[in-house]
Length: 505
Image (cartoon, rainbow, N blue to C red; front, side, top):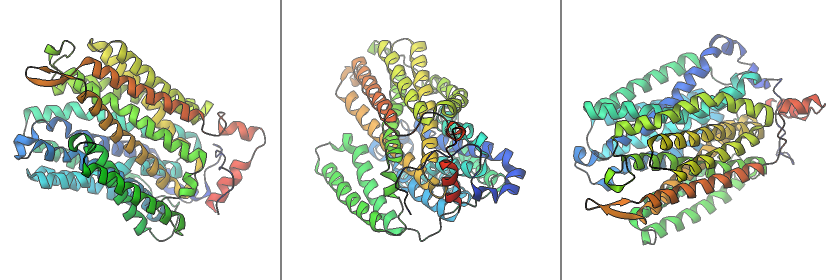
């Protein structure tokens, strides 16, 4: 039964009752659980970025048009957005470890298909399979909640969240080197081998969580969400190419509005909905989802704009003309920063609460874009500004799942985190479209080809920084004390303990 008030933050002094059922398994393999799950998260991020160095050459390598080649990215985005909440719900129902292994297996199968084919149709289908890996991080965070003691949970969740940026930054330079010096299929064989290693490691080192929410899987809800999200994200991602006022884009947005409205009605009536919309409507959960969307928008512009800016020709007056390998090395410090700052994020959340961490992270992202606006000509300032944005992203992305963990029952952790990741994905897709629109409208010819102006890049930074400030303001409106849960308990408030026990019953 739904509680009339938001669920108080669970105290750190007690592990939920269901997790204790697996205490024996946790003792034997617990020390390997976090490293293995972190490896899976990094692998997921690497999978998403390895195709980036290939994009300029794929039309020549496959004989396909640039528009068709762009679907190797779009297909992953669409399938990941659809499958993340679906697999999250399946994990809550049938076992998070089991579903995590299935997601990694689909990612590995997609890598094998890419490795054995040069047909663009096969490549797009394979990349769609790899989109299932987007569910790896929310599933892993849910496993960490169930398996780790409370005193280790915060730092583990923070590190798990940071793997998204760490993997993206660490994966791009090796992928660029492989593409530059070997056959491009080798890159996918390498990721397939890593994927197989990831599946094996999860099977051996990660215990199955006993926390379940039994029921019948909501197939109509899954199909309705898939149809609505495909229409929405396809319209957002293809609007610049097809024309924002074209009948196709208008039809997609109209279809998304109609389908998602019907889906909301169906979810509210379903006995076991795919997404508990009543839970999501609570301020502590709903505002966290809004903050995730805004943070995803603000963060993604950094990677998009930095890569284009440093590769711009020197004839533009601001470009550095760097190769794709050098570009990857420029983004590498951001990944190192995320690795180093994830423990700090956990400490801030433990002492001040994840709401404060999220607000601080969004403010730091805005500061990073202010640095980018001040000077985007010198390489060291470009790297420094991107690293500041990466620092803020670490703080914000680690706080978001912690907010969800504090606000939802244990049996709905994976599905709720899946929705949160979905909102970040929508934010990233919208950011990509918005940045592209800004840069397209601010170009000048260089060497006979239109190239974005420096003013266009500055406007993109200003837009992303403004959205980051909106995320900061949203975070500050999330209800709940900033003090850590232990403070509440020290005052004699045991409501969190009672709620936690009730969740485990």
